[in-house]
Image 1 (cartoon, helix red, strand yellow):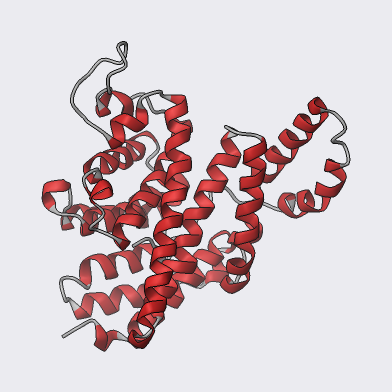
Image 2 (cartoon, helix red, strand yellow):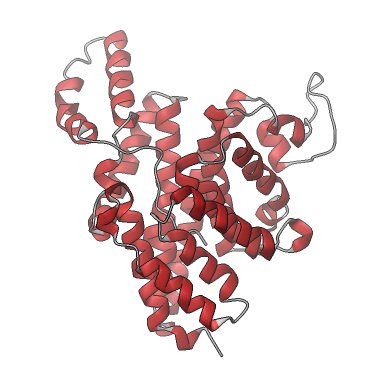
Length: 329
């Protein structure tokens, strides 16, 4: 479902330098206060500006795929020592969603039918990691706005919060501000990633309208968040869910136009998303090929900050064109 590999920010050598500094930092752990300070310092360094560029500017996706499991568990270990740290929460949760999408769900697509059991294994792992990432974001937002999780996952009937009843979802969504947009985006990405793998999981499927409302609210607060990431996600969401739950081909196409406008032709992902989520189900072969060729026309080296994302999108576009007979009558 998702075709992007994203992070919040990009930059230089901070991540590498922090890894090199870790042994020295932990020599300081002689007392609790010093330990807490060291953990906080490392947490801030690993999640600050520039901490993700070593991944996002990479031209070898396999290298990133091999490195991410260690990085994820490192962040999660630090988060266990520093619970509630905003940067660690966001980074840990988003990395789970990224890894599930780019290195589990997408590779499962490439496996031939005779490797069906392996494909199912990849998809089951991807769903599990999507949900882990989603849960990090949901827990954080529920901490900022008590009752948020209940409103999103439970009843949306109007209720006051003073007596402990579930608050109305709309009330909770309008409490969100710009600092919450990244968490809302990754929560939605994880949720809809899991639904795209298992649409029969009713606990997830029944809450689709609520999670869609969350993404729409985030797009209102910060329309250009992360190079149009919310609009890019909404292409696939609007195209894949029933109209009764808020889906619409027209909305999907409008989200594509908005994403391309914001990105100014720097990203291949919207073309891939529209091709697979709208042109393919409509069996519009010419439009499908046009969109895939538009994705392939973007040179990853022209936009270093998007190199990894564009490399992955172009690989997928080539695969679809090479297997086009499998998808069109």
